[in-house]
Image (tube, rainbow, N blue to C red; front, side):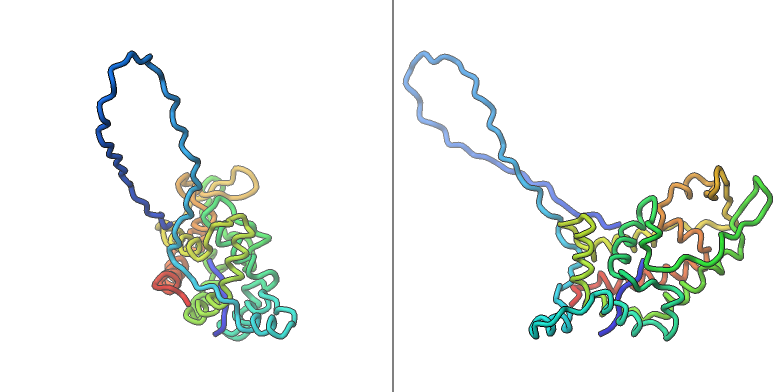
Length: 270
């Protein structure tokens, strides 16, 4: 099976309330005596280690065959990023990867970007995709700026790439290489985290991006443009991308994201 992952979710961990009852038997009557009242020291509760959150969408972590075979033969293990790039090349249309993706340090780039999308900023230098060509297309006079209708064309190569990738093959390759994604996520600072859960959570977050109608007004307080609507400006980096790419592009991307989510979260991946 071939492929790896490029993408670009909010799931709440469910818990319950427990009730504990202590029952004491009546003690036999004590002999009459004068007892000085005393105050017992409070019993100190033993510190407890918080339980790790349950895994929502498990993926079996089995090293790829090439890695196992290399270990058995006492040979150096193949580079995980090379395996990911090879798999991606097999899933995407011929000749389309170089225009969209950056292959170097691919797995780490994917993991870092997925984790950053629901945050305020994305580490641009660690993104697994090339930046959209050209500057933001703006229309209107000063004080009445808006995103131009032509701006959506800058995102079409990414939308078409997302629509052309075989999602079943994508997920199969992701599962095959999952131990490397999981390790990269732990190296990012989540020793108890589970990357596939985070991935599904981030997809859900992107699917919840608003779909404003009509021109999107802009302001330019300094060098960069910002959304004039405070609610849009307060969106995460990932949801801002969904808004900037244009309504039609966003709808097409959401269709693919929803299909990808159903594959990632539908059952135990193995």
